[in-house]
Length: 122
Image 1 (tube, rainbow, N blue to C red):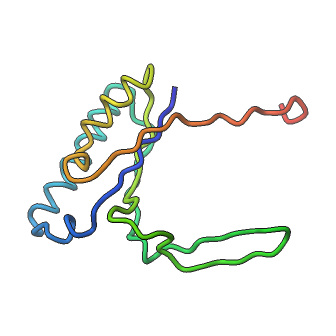
Image 2: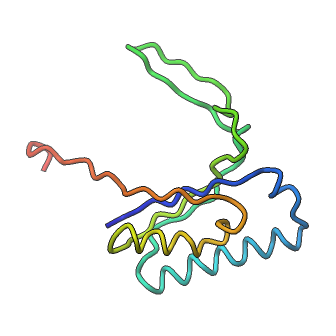
């Protein structure tokens, strides 16, 4: 089963990292991705830019609107994700605990919802 691990980070903690500490975090993150890939548990991972770069799009009854981010006042923001394969939620949580950003942020683990394909589209 696939699980998405949403990586949430506190910008103050990231800003406090020295360039060497940031490079080490990046190195360890990429190494963990490779480790998961070797075990057949890695699907995809991406870091994303800070909330200030976001644009929120809404379509309400044909009326399209957009708003510059960030979208909410919180201490942490979503900094990226890792899509993994795991036997069950317990294994997904164990994998998420190994994500280097878990040491300074929060990893939200959710099962991926598979949209049922209608027979006419098969």
